[in-house]
Length: 298
Ligand SMILES: [Zn+2]
Image 1 (cartoon, protein in one colour):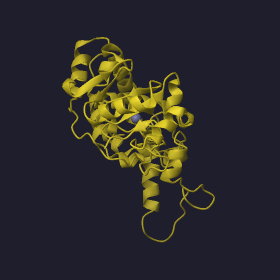
Image 2 (cartoon, helix red, strand yellow; image 1 turned 90 degrees about the vertical axis):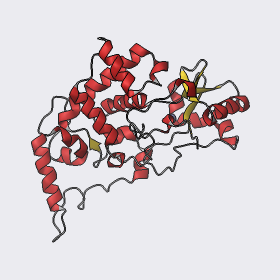
Image 3 (cartoon, helix red, strand yellow; image 1 turned 45 degrees about the vertical axis):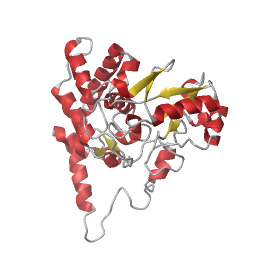
Image 4 (tube, helix red, strand yellow; image 1 turned 60 degrees about the vertical axis):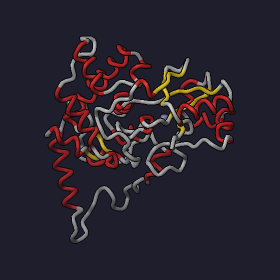
């Protein structure tokens, strides 16, 4: 399959029905494409024809809202990375992890695309990005995320956007940064009103940091970009680039990124403040899971 087929990632249900399985070594792409073409032709206007995907006996398609509730499930119309790109996904995700390790988690939150390339070029521990990896990153950035079922706005339009150091403040003890202005002011006000038991768990994030989070999740979902995008905004679509930040209860660990956060006193106090809004609410229309920890900045 052509590399550009990434942009026409294969609906999971069709791939499964055609007997093809996602595999890092790549197999049966031609069969999948033939099946896909057949099914497109079958659904063209004309006399009603048998449709194995939606005819009686088949499960109805889950709504966008339902998917954001059972966000870690897979669905028949999920989009997968094309077989030809599955190895590239794994290698580029690993290279981003190595970059993060080398520059440190704090600095990595601010790292620009150009700086990332320069680090990779100069440090053998990371190794230079291959042409396939760079194509993959570029295609991912310019792809329309609605094809994965992600309906949030794109907020970063330039691959080489930088976050100037003078615009951010490092929050002591967190390893994260906040943009000066509303994000920093709001965080300080929240800390004053709720107390020291509330902590910053993620602040401003560069495009590179969003790539690392999204691709690491996409490796875990075996290339299912829809499943990944229900938990993490694709690169360019994260409001963390604009000032949104995540909060958690001190000592609550990874539970801060689950619904359990709603049961903490910190969350209740946060909501009672009257000046805090959550970006991805329980009924959000963006195809994203409920994120009670993610604070929305206007
Ligand atoms: Zn967040």
